[in-house]
Image (cartoon, rainbow, N blue to C red):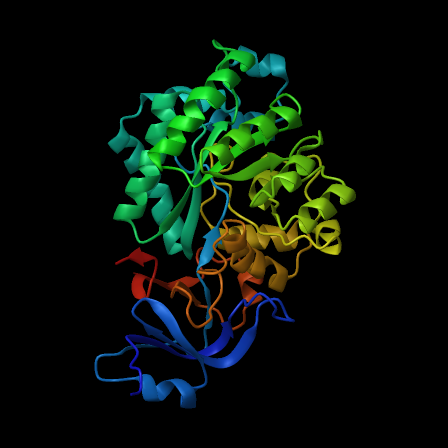
Length: 415
């Protein structure tokens, strides 16, 4: 008996499958069609192959003249937070001296975000975050990683991850929740005492709650050492969470070796990581996640260079890093930055935002590409050629978003 499709995307000018072994990185199919059944991709092919699967109840979307791609996988964000750091942002733009920043009373750094995040109720924090996340969804993101780390106490860290759960239940998006208790430490507690509390109490408690899939830490000068990060991530593994690591963003102190040794799902930032360490990450199967948005937002002295990463065999993903220091909700804008400022090809950047993003969450078997058997997370761009996503500086090139086989966004509106 011929299988019938619930939904068909027809006549795509360019269908980007983004399959893992695509020689062109994006697996482009001209005049491609997709059949979706029960939330999953049933078939990908030509009109002749897909048209027989259409019945009277099949929803058909004509993508003629447009590009069809997998939904974006935004694999690194800190989207759940309260308040703003706009004063700090402009202090950096104006290159104010530390003395002038102090004179003006401008607060800086992640600890600035602790007070408003701690002060928000669960529903207020959800409401503030949902507004940002809706922008992400209409910009093509169908899976979003979301970290805690703006509480550095048990109550607020749990609250941030409970917001993640609410976001997934109320919005058409999947959330990959990450515990980032190793983002810093409260000044009134101190690093040593906080680390003891983090490893012995918080991480086991988070593991028991089931609220986090991943455990993360920040490895950099002035933050946690490589040895300290190893202890944090090992505690996370023992509590049932997979390791991730903020690594080499502003210095290199050996975190990549820790990430490789623990077979971390991803190592993120990577501005200062040397080639030999990039190779270790690649050999360990870790995905690298350089972040164009934060390099742009802070005017980074050493913007990441993708060339040695690629040459050393490292699969690289890109993400918005949406946070108070990088208020970006648009993956298309991140692709623009990756190409224009970091020299990535359109193909490399699109792959980094889809298949590689899924790999950075260990979900490449389910999402990130358009292949039979995978979840039908699909987007349609109002563009005639896929490279235009990095060339047309549009407000939002995404016309339609399909999440789990259902149309969830049309013309920048969530249905």
